[in-house]
Image 1: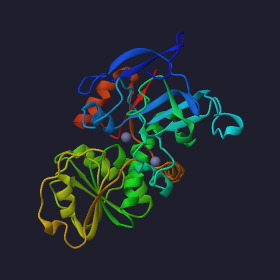
Image 2: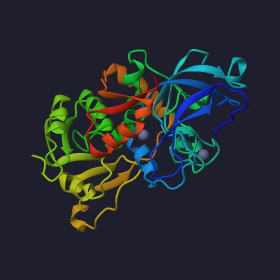
Image 3: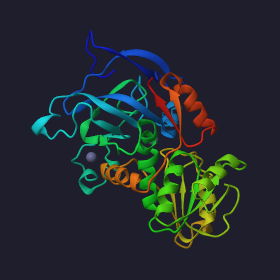
Image 4: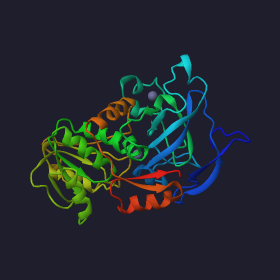
Length: 343
Ligand SMILES: [Zn+2]
Ligand SMILES: [Zn+2]
C-alpha cells in the first residue's frame, strides 16, 4: 500500500480488504510522501457515513486494500519533493493540517476550470481512491490540505473536515431559506444547525421516529421544532436538507416544504426514492444532490467555523476500535460524531 520502501518504519492501520468485511488492524510500512505530498502523523480521524457506504460496497470502486478515513487532523512529519521552498509549499514540518474527502483533481477539465472541481470526472478521494486516516500516518497532496483553526483541538476539529465542509456546501444550496428542515440529525446536522442559527435561520429537525435523544440534542442546538420524520412540521418550510441515506425521506421532505421550496440531498448514497405524485414537486419545488466539496468550500468553512463559533460534539474511540465506532454510527447510537484516535 502506498510507496513503502524496505526497512521503512512501521505503523498501525485499520484496513478494508473486501467490502462487507470488518476492518483489520494491521502493521504496515509508513507511506513515503511523493512529489507534492506531505507525510502526516494522524492525531485524529473522524468516522463518516460515507465510510459505511464504502464498507458496505454501495460505492462501486474503492482501491483495495484500503485504509478508509477522510476527516484527518494531523501534523506534517515529512515533506515530499517540491513541497518546501520555492515550489509553493504551504506547510512545514510540524504544521497542523486537515485532510478532507477531495484528494486530487485534474485541474484542466471543464468542471475544474469553472470552479466546480467537486465534479471533476478524474477526481480522487481520500479514504476511497487514496489511503486515508484510519492509521497512524498518511500521505496527502499538500494542495488539498488545509490549516486547522487553532480554536479547535484535534479531536473536536476532525468532524469539521467532512460533516462540516460538505454540510456547509449542502446548506449553501438552500439559498436564503429562512425556515430550514434537516432530516437526519447526526454529525453534519449538528454542525450545520449552529451555522444556520448564526445566519438567523430557524431549524426544524426530523429524526428517526421515536428518537427522543436526537430530538433533545437538536433542541439543545437551537432547533425551533424537533420531531419524527413521519410528522409534518408545524408550518411549511422554505428548504429541507436530507442527511439520512433513506430515499423515502425525499417525498417526505417535499411534503414539508412550501411552494418554491428546495430539497437538498447531502449524502453520497441513498436508498431508492419511492415513486411519488407529481403534485409534491409542483409549484416549483426542486430536488437536488450535493457532491463532494471544492477547496474553496474548505477555506470558507474553516474560516467561518470559529467565528460562529461551531462547537462539535464528539465521541472518541481508539483506532483499533474503528469497527465498533462504525457499528455505533450504523445503528444511530452516537450523539454527534465519532472520532478515532491513534493512541
Ligand atoms: Zn478536472
Ligand atoms: Zn464524509
